[in-house]
Every structure is written in C-alpha cells, then in structure tokens.
Amino acid sequence: MIQRRGFLQRIGLGGGLLAAGAFPYGLARLLAPDLPVNPRTHLRLPGALKDPAAFAAACIGCGLCGEVCPPHCVRFYGREGGDRANTPYIDPENKACTLCGKCMEFCPTEALTVTPRHQIDMGIAQIDRAACYPWVDKGICGACVSICPLGERAIDFAMWNQYRPVVRQGCVGCGLCVEVCPHPSLPIRVVERTEGSVTRHRVS
Amino acid sequence: MTPNPETSGAPPRPFRFRRHLNKLRWVSLVAVFGLLVLLPFLHLYQTYMAAHAYDLLAPSETRIYDAMEALTQPFVSDPAEDLDALKGTTWSGTLFGFKLSDPLAALGQMAAGFSLYGPFLLTALVPIAFTLVFGRFFCGWICPATLLYELNTNLGAWLHKVGFPTGGRRLDRRMKYLVLALGLVLSGVTGSVLVATIYPPAIIGREIYYTVALNGFGVGAVFFVITLLFDLLVARRGFCRYLCPGGALYSLLGRYRPVRIRRDASDCNDCYKCDAVCEFGLDPMRDDFGQECNNCTACIAVCPTDALAFTLRLHDLPYQGPGHLGRHYRKGSAMPIESAEEEVK
Image (cartoon, rainbow over all chains, first blue to last red):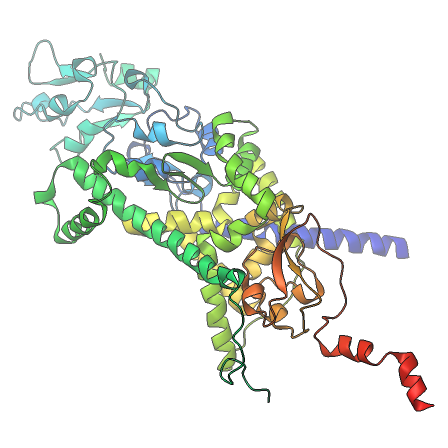
C-alpha cells in the first residue's frame, strides 16, 4: 500500500515536472495558433526545400534571408504561423522577389540552398484569361512580360495575338509580374507548379 | 561607524583591472543590443540604395537614409554590398564575413530534422570553443536579452524599495536542463526548431528586426514580456536561472571551464556583498560558483577587499572556511581554546 502510494507520488511528481518544463513551449505555441493562410500570398523562398515539413525542420528562424534581401520582400510568419512561426515567405502582391539569390547565399542552414536561377521553383504564374486586360480586349498592357527577369522562356506574348501574355514552362514563380500587374483583381498570380495547374490553366 | 578610507585620507585602494570588468561588460551588452537595433536600419538603407529611388522616399524614410548614409560613409564604399559584412543576430549571423551561430540553434536544428548539416554546424564551433573555456560568458556578456533582464532586476529592486511585492522565490536550478531536453524532444516531434520560440536572445534579435523593418513586433515580444513579468513577480532573473534552454546548454558545456572566479580566503572578510549582488543566486562567499556562473564579474566589482579574481582551474575549490579578515575567523585564531583556558586558570 505504501509502495503503491510512493509510486503514484513519483509518477505525479514526474508528470508535474514534465508539465512545468513543457510550459514555456506550450505558452509560445498558444500565442501562435496555426491559422490557414492564402498560399498565393505566401510563396516559399527561392532555393527553399520543396517539402514544407523539411523546410520547417531546417529553418531556425534567424531572419537572415529577410535582412539581406535588397528588394525587402521577405516576410515572416507571425501569429498565424503555428509551427511555421518566424519562417520566411514572400508576398508577391506586396513586394516580389527579384531572384538576386542573396538569401540562398546567406542562409546558414540547408533550408535555402544555392540554386541556379532557372532551376528555382517558387511556383508558376497563372493568368486568368477572363480578367487580364489584353485577354478581354480592354487594352494593351504587357507589364508582366516586360518586368519578367527570365525573359521569353518564362512569359511571352501569344503567337496569334501579340498583346496577350502567355506563361511558359520556364517560369520560376518569382512573382514580379504579380507585383506590377495593374489590374485591381490581379489576374496573374503564382500557383503551385503541379501537373493539374499547368493543364487546367493553359500554361503553354 | 567606520570612517570611509577614501575620504579620511587613507591611501587609496590600488587599481585593479578586474574590478572594472563589470563596466566593460555593460559596454559589451549595450554595444550588442545597439548593433541589433542599428542593423535593421542599415538594411532599410540598403534597400533604398538598391531601389535607386531616393526621390520617391517618404519623409521618414529619407531621414533614415540620410542618417545611415552619414553613419556609414566613412567606412564603406558600396553600401549595397559592403554592409552585408555585418548581418543577422546572435542566433545566427555574419560578423565581418565570418558566419557564427548559436550552439542551441545547431542542436535544435539537428533535433528537428534528425539530420546533420556540416556547414551550419561549423558556424557554431567558435561559440562552442569559447563556451568550453569561459563557461556561460554568452549569458553575461553578449546576450541581448540579458541587458533587458538586468534592467528589469534593477526595476524590481526599485519597486521592492517603494513597497511593491516582488518575487524572490527559489526554484530548482536543474529545471532548465529539463526544459532543454523537452525542447529538443518536442522539436523532433513537431518538426520545427521549437527552442527558437522561447529562447530570449533569438526572440529579441528577430523582434527588433520585425519592429524596425517589417510591420511591427510579433508573438515573441509577447512571450518576452511574460518572461520579464516572471522575473519581476516570481524569481529574480528566474528565466535565465531556471528555464532558459540556451543557459542550460552553456552551463553543461562550461562545466569544466578552465577560467573561473575564485575566492581568496586570506583576503575575504565575509561581508556577504558578493552573495547579495549575484543575480544568479550563487554563493561566491562560500566558494560555490558551479556551472551556472555567467562570469558577469559583479561580485568582483563589489568586493571591498579584492578577494575574488579569475583563476585557471578546472574545478571550484571546496568551501575554504570563513574569510581570514572576517569576524568568525579572527575569533577562532586570535584566541585559540587552549590559551583561553590558560588565562582562566
């Protein structure tokens, strides 16, 4: 009987200690609940590990990528981040990446690895042909084509109508086109580079 | 009341460099903190440079641009590139082109991803080497949170003076090792570097950057304020002493540090000032420093007889007995029991 009581006391003490030790982490986690984010305004950085889980495990949240970014486009997950808190993302609607590669160079971990410009994969641009001005014959624009740092291998005008932009497979999803798009509803956006989006949204 | 020797014409105490180390430490803390505040402004300046858009800047941005230009002009020729030599925080950063990381960052990342990444681990080597020699010196001399925590302690002392109840609770020092171990385990479970969310220097570094260069502070600042309240209301310097995972790691690494503070019993007068001033609640007067001492040198600065000094030893001395200048020791030695008995006869 006494043995059992001692045993239970020991278990209680151990549990209490574990709870006390885990309390700071619990508090920090409570302050940052995991809220859904819009993937179109939360692009991963150039050279980032493809797997989001691997990226979260590799990134230590030091903020160096943001601190060296010349266009100042890197943001960090805050309250909404949950376990991703303090990891970086890029919001192209606010400020887009210029593919300068400084973040990859400075990242101390393998979260961002130096990648050649054309092999970067942040996503792929997609044009909503029901809204884009030239595609609905509302004028001549071409802002996305002229800003693209990768040139005609990424975005080009359609063969049969030299005003309508068309995204090509070389697009790496930097989002500069999203930043400059003059249309208020941003008919061009960066989506995941998956088979489905390529066929469905007619990226040629 | 004994006359103050400095005003009564007695010869002044000889100059001892070690008595001024504490001031030097404050200079170091303020310099690190000031640098962390300055770097985001320098980054903003770099982005304005990169955009070639001085004419389009808002008035507040123009002020930043002009101030940073005036500050850096004598040192750099190409701000957009040259200022990259000094980047980051104490969590991980570049110091004049030399990459340095917190050992806890390396350990936490290993635990989160179950993997070793050589180039990153190499950046933690120099801090680890320094910790092996000097113990928890990072906590006392560099940590940007220490500056705020010590100011918080001073605030607590002032509040205590005016009658506000502040906490002086003593918990178990070994608690922080549990926090470190749990942090590494939980990092592995959740797959993110969880220690970074509760480690104050990492929080301070990035929250200053968020506040200056991005849209304002985030969660970390809230957590940090909670730890300040914990220090104020529960235990003095409680977070560093009982909960900080980084402090735990540095304590373990510095367990057999060769450079440690030692009391010279022949100079000690048992005045107890060192014990009173020690923010980590250690007991220098009874030779108890242990692995927790962060080499803050406050006890050296406060010692009226210069009995405390740095020495090269792998272990603390066991308690050497009362100080030879103190009352207890003199009572025992000036009148040994045998002679006292003879006098009575």
